[in-house]
Length: 430
Image 1 (cartoon, helix red, strand yellow):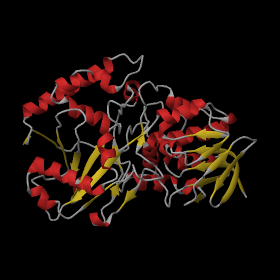
Image 2: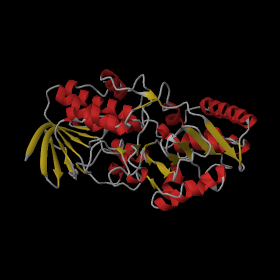
Image 3: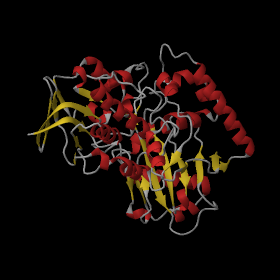
Image 4: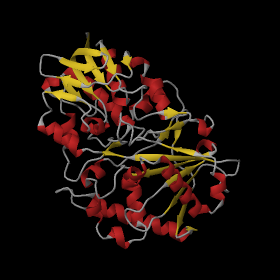
């Protein structure tokens, strides 16, 4: 039987961060990871279908760079980071490319949309869709704006989202990108300092009714003074880890009130050097006609590569999660509608669709709060049993960084600080 001061479950951003912080303070740690790899939902791969080009399958942007701890770590080591956005944008509607007047009308609609959202009372909490009201249907651009802001950015449709949580988690500041992928940057910055990690070793049961904790795994039992659980809320909700005694009602309700949203990527590779008339990286999207219509936005030729990355979220992503071929067909159909039959020829080579929704180790991309669940994130973050059992990760953030790698890293540090200093969960802990 193994004993450590602190056991961490999950080797993603929060788990690696917690382990690094604890080890730096002299604590013995062990990280258990159910899958065959580290990094969690920040994964940089080099798929064969992309000819070896790297791809961030999950998290890709270093949001809120001024407050992002991963940015701070990278800058301290001299890693060059670049601005994430600023590429030309092309919009299509009704089978044609948008005119300058269309773009101006879209921007005006976007301003009006946000004005309605932020002006709506936050108490009592309602869905984002309810806050938008008839504007959802009355303005021709509102369905696209709603889908972009909710389904793509928040990974859940506006009808399912808490208005208060949506407003809290508006991303601000600078967005950066890593030179070789965010997933790779995470491992470069934190993997070594996280210490001992056991892969393919899921925690199946946590007994926290005692002076310490006892964790059962297929590789044996581990005991510790405390445990930090950083697995996705999707894994918790699915019951993959048993708890004895059962979690208190407030914690269990928080898990139920923070479902996993889904943001999927669909990547198509061009067969030749044809860039469809685009000189470099370009953002493209096709407007939809009504709320709930399937929507994809694209970044074409990122880093001057020969592929395009499509983004779809919310119910559209869930509908296609179990059928990657259908997701690829949908992406090609959108390209065909935007730029004609040349797209079929150029993207005949193949592609891939990410599978976070069906990955049993994650079961989604990141959390959103249901309408009315305004205290769920804080409730999940509350230490149990005097700090012997602590949940940590992006789902616990109440500082506007929920759903981000930076938020997860900060939350790993928060959990570590509770154990080291007996704090009550300071969200600014670094």
